[in-house]
Image (cartoon, rainbow, N blue to C red):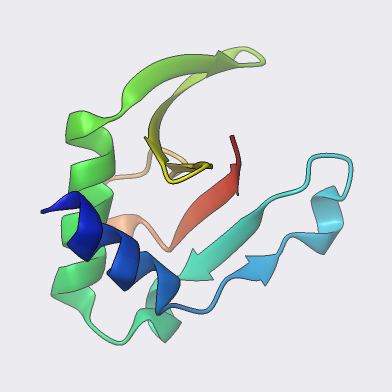
Length: 89
């Protein structure tokens, strides 16, 4: 994935504010609203293959930093991943 193509793709999706975690402002995009299962899974794999591992509390997540945001998933197997998160970096 080219960085500019990735940015266009991400910008074209609907991101929901995570109201239940307002103390940690972030947004999420749902697989079921993504529109293309294979594309969603490609992005999940890309985040995990090219991102950096960082601790959050007692867990470690893989974060992809792009255009002022960081993107991550919750670590479920790709086929079971239902959302991608993002927060301002």
